[in-house]
Image 1 (cartoon, rainbow, N blue to C red):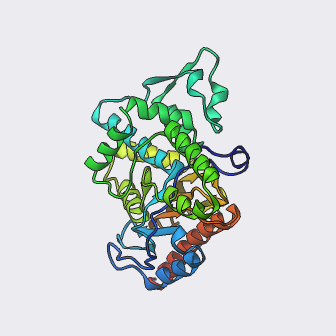
Image 2 (image 1 turned 30 degrees about the horizontal axis):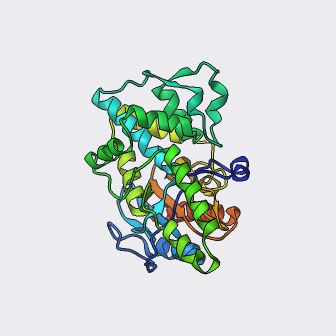
Image 3 (image 1 turned 120 degrees about the horizontal axis):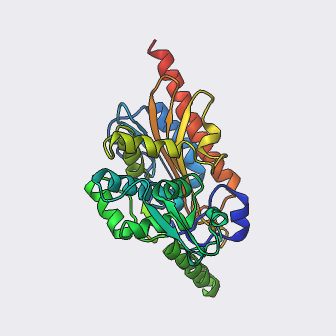
Amino acid sequence: MYLILASLLAAASATEPAAPPPVVNVQRAEAPSAPGPASLQQRINALAEPFDRRSGVAVQSVEDRWTVGVNTGQSFQQQSVFKTWVAAAALDAIDRGSLRWDEPIRIEPADLIFPYQPMAKEVPPEGRAFTVEELVRWSVIHSDNPSVDALLKRLDGPAAVQATLKRLGVNGIRIDVGERDLHAMFDQSRSELAAAPAEQKADVFERIFSDPRNSATPAGTVDALARLQRGELLSPLSTERLLGIMAETGTGLNRLKAGTPAGWTLAHKTGTGGDLDGATNGTNNIGVMTAPNGRRYAVAVFIWGARRPLAENERLMADVAKAVAEWETARAADSR
């Protein structure tokens, strides 16, 4: 995540800044991987309409493999959502024998440079070692920043993680930098906006918000999530570990989680950026919703550059989850 403003950090789920989507024409119903239900597509269209090109939503049926959504092929800054894929790369390394789940990795006081770093309270002045398992849990459940950078370093950096995703056949997801660089990029963006003459601010804003680094498309994200859930990315044990940890995520309680009904489960990861000239630098949530009957849906909602209150951004995510659950409930009733 880029530098999260202190006030934002204190407030919401987990925090992390960056830069939003390329300026393109909105495409309301991009071609799905397989024909999806028109009623759910129409519901998502209506929910996302007020956000225009500043939001991207995708839903994929894990079993049937159709995708519906809005701006599904547009790139959005992931913020801390990228920690999901660093964790996946770590588990892939374990599957391949180049990393151990219980391998110790040291965190030193010099690594604790972020406004948001909940693990800091566990690091004494002399530093300490954490296992890979602990770092994955800190980075996913708590969206901790030093932990994901430590994992990235052990995995030989963002380029190596990107190579892993490519080898696994994951498309539409970029891992270009870690948290330290994301924060520096956000600082630079704020400085550029502050220094820009009034007549140039809009152009500077759009340039910043079209930075492709650490971005992802909603379609690529739900495809990767669905493949993870089907066991196509990792070993059975690693798949169980990652989805189990995602189910413990403690951030974003007003997002997908708020729209997930009782009896359903949600394995998810949030991402939240700071404020840039009154616009969100990323309010995101991705995850897999599982119905009581076992049917599963990969869901991704990205909001990037919208000048709306956090509560409105989060309500869109909750409403998307609710729409998915209601559609599945109706489908199951009709199939009886």
